[in-house]
Structure formats: C-alpha cells, structure tokens
Amino acid sequence: METMRNANCTKATKNYSVYSRHCPARQFLDRLADKWTLLIIDRLKSGETRFNQLRRDIDGITQKVLSQTLKKLERDGLIERRVFATMPVTVGYSLTPLALTLVKTIESLAHWAEDNMDAMREAQTRYDTQYGLVKETEL
Amino acid sequence: METMRNANCTKATKNYSVYSRHCPARQFLDRLADKWTLLIIDRLKSGETRFNQLRRDIDGITQKVLSQTLKKLERDGLIERRVFATMPVTVGYSLTPLALTLVKTIESLAHWAEDNMDAMREAQTRYDTQYGLVKETEL
DNA sequence: CAGTATCCTATTAGATACTG
DNA sequence: CAGTATCTAATAGGATACTG
Image (cartoon, rainbow over all chains, first blue to last red; front, side, top):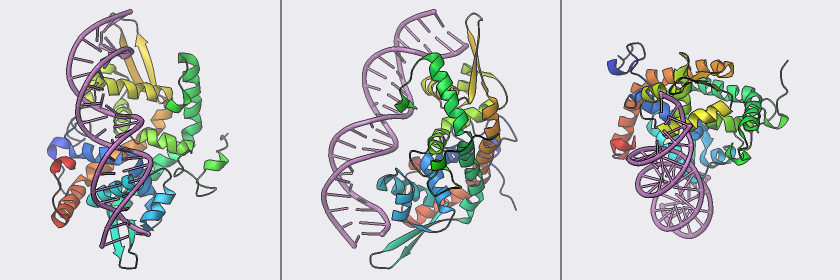
C-alpha cells in the first residue's frame, strides 16, 4: 500500500514541487545533495563499518563533520548505529533498507563524475582560455 | 574510443578513488553534490530558460548564488549561455549534451526524495521521541 | 533584463583538547 | 575507540545599490 503523496508537493500534479523551498522532498534533496552524505552512503554500501574506519576512508572529512553527518543520517532513518560493549567501546554504522534503495542512484552519480571528468576538465580549460584566467585553486 | 582513465583514480583499479580528496572525480562529485546545482540542471531539462525565469522557478535562490552557480556550470561544460542582442539584452541558459546525460540520474535522486520523504519524516519523529527533542528548525 | 559590486552577517568547518 | 566541547577561521550567503 502506498502512502498518499502530499497533494501540494507532487511533480505529477503541478509545477510546484521539488523546486519549492517548503516542499519536504526539496528539503530531503537538499540533505542528500551534500558531498559527505553521498560519500558516506556510498562507502557504507559494502557493509557495517566502524567510525574511525570511515574517517580514514573518506579522505578529508573531519571527526566533527563525520559525526554530525552520521547523526543526521541516523535521524533520517538512512543509517543504523550499533554499539558493541567492548572495551573500549566500538560502534558500527550500516545502511538501513531504506538507504539501500538509494545506493544505485548514488553510484550512478559517482560513475558519471568518473566517466565525464575529462570532458569537464577540458571544458574548464577552454573556458579559462576564452574568458581569462581563473586561479586553479578556484576550480 | 574511450579516453583512458587516470590510473590513480579509478574504482576498478584500487580503493583509491572517489573517496580520495585529490581525485578529480571526487572534485566533480563535490560540485554536483550541491542543492542548487542539482535543482538548476533539473530545471533546465525542459529547455532553454532565461535568467529571471530560473530565479523565479527555483524558489529561494538569490540572484548572486544563481549567477555564481550558472557560471561554474558553464565553465564545467554543463550549461550553455546564449546572449540575444535585444534591448534590453536577454540571456538563455540550456543544458549541453554532456549535461543531458546526467539528467536521468538527477531525476532519479529527486524522485527518490519524493518517494521516501514520508519514511524519512517518520524516522525523524521516532528518533526525536527516543533521543530527546530537536527543534524543527534543525531539520 | 541580466547581471556586478560591495558590505556585512550567519553558518560551516577546522584545530585542539578532553572524556567514558 | 568514539566521540563531545570549545574556540576560532574561512566561506557562503543575504541585502542593497548600481550598470550596460
């Protein structure tokens, strides 16, 4: 049985949809549209992983941001957190069934980035040649 | 003919990939993983659109941010900007063929958010009930 | 119309230190 | 190990005014 969609916020009904600031779908899209979120979910697809392992694997993320992002995702029902009463304590993070349904899409996005990064880099070079120089750090 | 992938940055070759900070694919994923970027590309899929039209349609975006984001996307080769010498001047933005190959994935992400927003809202309620209250504004 | 420029504030992120 | 707390630095974002 499908839950009824919010009549005020469905692509099918009118143009008022994910483009509208107050549409819940838009808010969750905003949540997903975050580099750490995508990276974390993608990383967890291979199974339960411990906090510090995630931190090592996701290059550049800080403890603080990892911690915050995991907490948000847990709240959204996308990540499950399991605590093991070892000494010292260990904690494992894994995707919920809900998040598993999202993995394919995220992979598709990541693969697209991999497959097309050369094209985009060339485009950048062309643009910079045409319109004057932008420092590489602004890339 | 496929361009050869950067050997240091391919999922197929080693674990060093999109998770690595300096991998170009990761950098472009970071670029895509932005709410305005996704919204703009999705909005443009229906064809060339003028600046102020975009601004009206994408609820909440400011002139400044729209302008900045469009410029980045143009530089990345995802958006084409056409200027018409009317008086006053009008400008149309549209997706490049490269960006068109990305649209399906973005739609998939947006649809996922729409389809699962209820589940996520329930998860949030459950979480908040269990672990104490979070202001709704922090959602 | 389609922006740019400026100023100023708010949010994020980083570094460091500390705890059960 | 897996975090929290705190403080600071960087950056993004908003408001406003102005231009070809």
